[in-house]
Image (cartoon, rainbow, N blue to C red):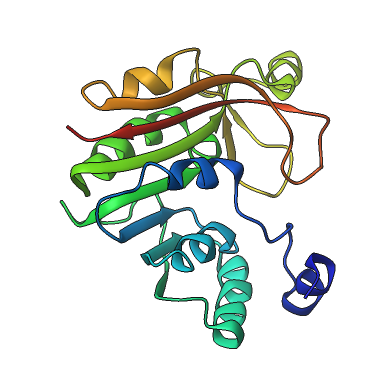
Length: 214
């Protein structure tokens, strides 16, 4: 089935394809098969890992996105996926449960203080030797300049959004993603220009990290 037909059948809001960072992260996931997808959206990354043999727990607070995701899984049986409607901020992350966790372009939809509250719990949910894959918009993103010139910051680098996709936008500071994972082994780190995976903008500026819990 073509991507266009797939989107039409399941009413996907975005192209149903895994994030490039998921593909890169897969090469580092060589121990264990339990994976947590934080802010799974419509589930493309969860399906990608389930088809690679992972047992995936997928959480997101957007009920409409999860409705599309569940319909897809019911029809196509992509693998072992447990879908839960939960907020990434308030989810009760079970300690030492997962071999890996992905959190892709999710913390940019939080307030800065929510990121600081959530991350320690997310890190504890990954076993020793487990891997975390994360991405976020950073302060070099063109939208940051636009927001800074027209909107009031409610916290450092944090604004209320002008769109309906989420309530907040947080543009992470330079090198901050690396600092937030102090004590982890950094396997891959990047800050800079990336293509918009949904084709909605000429480009974005993101921060990417793949790291292993010591």
